[in-house]
Length: 271
Image 1: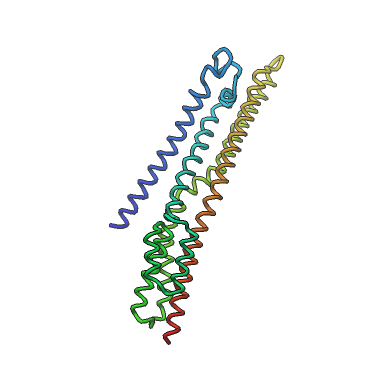
Image 2: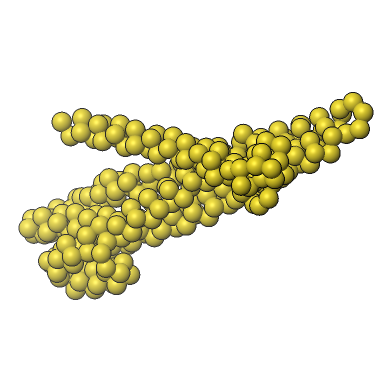
């Protein structure tokens, strides 16, 4: 039953992610068509033949790749906000560094009950993983520190708890890493499309069409700039969240090591 619920939750999450991606592309298309392509942005009110009067009009002239790039840029923003709130929630309610210092002090002093209460107050993925190890510590302690496998049981417990929390922390990180490449490739595709138009104008019979040449070069440069902006933002946010996740994982591992060492020390003092 638990596996069925987990599978259903995964399918539901995948569907929501797909809806967000489609919605971002749709919003990007609407922005390109109706905001950037508004008649007021062009001379003579003609988006197709009129000269752009502002930046919005210039971006509109980037061509059919622009709405896709805008959608990808919007995806980076949406998933970055989503990851920020999820990782902030995983860190818990209070300051994580103060919480870890307090947990370390209580564990080294053997105040396991106080450490469990601190985890209940902190909440979040880190506190949940540490609490599961502390509860296992209490269970092992009731055995009188006689089991040789007890320390391994505690270590395994915190590894399992960390494994359960990691998918939630790393969700959508793959999308951000993919957008790093897709942004550049999308911009490159728009650049190639623009340059094809530019060289097509040069190759036309008679005097080259300067307007067509300028449009092609403009399209190439606009797509390049939009693609680079999308990739740059995606890679910055990806590395930022990866750093946050590594910090949370390190905090869990550090607390787990302290719990195991405390158990071994107490067991050794009873021999």
